[in-house]
Length: 552
Image 1 (cartoon, one colour):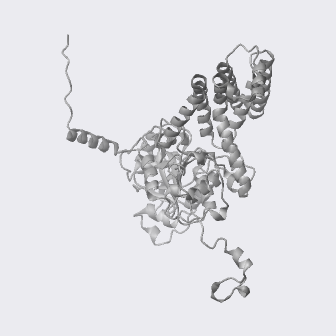
Image 2 (cartoon, one colour; image 1 turned 30 degrees about the vertical axis):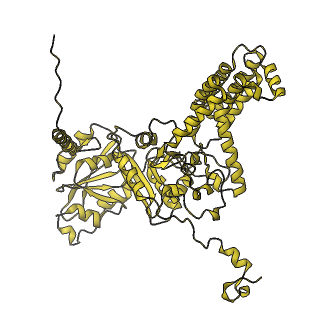
Image 3 (cartoon, helix red, strand yellow; image 1 turned 180 degrees about the horizontal axis):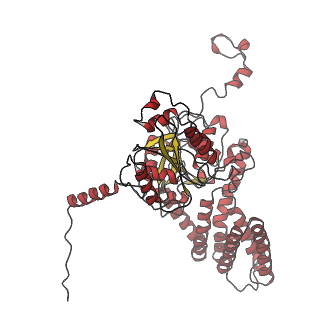
């Protein structure tokens, strides 16, 4: 029998040496790409290494030509077909370099530092940078930019020639609004940042770009207002993003799972939206937005539970209508979460709480039903979830038809067959309709998940069990944080200033301060003279008495 041995504990100093060694080994790697040998002055050697590194890809174009200087210079332009704009390459790079006529200039007589001279005197393209490392050069080529290699130069000119096909700017299908702008984000990051710039023409708007994903090298933009957003919040967002070590990022949901505070919570602690106006409003309130390339969904942080039920058009209607709409939405939230569980609890444990005439009606409709109330509700809820999932996966017209016709036929047939009571179809249908009022798809999914354990608790514990479950749920929600912000604020902890935009919406001119839960640098949203026009109309200068007092 082999003798059991134990490993000795490794000293901290030894662990640090190993960590430093790993960091040194990784320092030569950027985004999963090897740095490789330094760029050489030999053009043929550089092109040979680049072909070996990228591989035999027929979409990578190597365009060789000669720049007509007093001493002609050979050059090679490398780009990926399909990711670049052919018009930009032909007109602003190839035509400019091959038809150059300033050969009698003083700078053209000297071949030293040719890359800088070509950048300053010949190229007419907007964005040009100089690189001397292989990793950024390869990443730029695979990102849709063009690399210009020159004979005798150990540096490369990177030209921004991105011009792939992309979807136009349309209204977000997941966040439709009756009143408001009809624009949403697309899958192109630079188009999305330009839309934000178009709305906020403030020099304090900052857009920080980083790359996430060793293989995909996905562009990620951190957007915030420097004079409004808390710098600690910005630093925390940037730190969490930079610490992500992942092979690839295909959608913003990848980042959401890595940077959220409560990864095991059912409630989303980041807000997801594809509406430009919603992102702009969040930036003006002191929040930080994260935009990811190849997806129209942006991440907003921090967020509270109540804000997940706010709609963008709540602020486009007059405040009385906005209050009514928001109260209906929160009432629908309560029904979508508790209605089946309360019905089960009343029918099983507390039928005496139901009015007598209504109880007689319910008992009459349930005569001959072979299943108990809990199983009846469970079967109907599962059927609704299956229909909902099927309608989403099918094409648009077919999905709507299947959802409506399938639900109607299934419910009517089940009632006629005596398997389901009519009252149960009303309860389940009302619950499903109320769940559709949630503006955020993430919180709607959470309510659908929580509905099933609450139904079981209602079957076992009745109203007392539901009360205890609600208390435990509120305690759990009170402990959730979104980048340090309590999830139930401004209620827990109580903040009277932020209650102006809570269950009801105060008039726009009354919400002078920004939400204090975000701890913005600039607290005031508007000046004290925002409503002085009314005083000017009621008391013109000719009627104002001396000493500043108004006439009776």
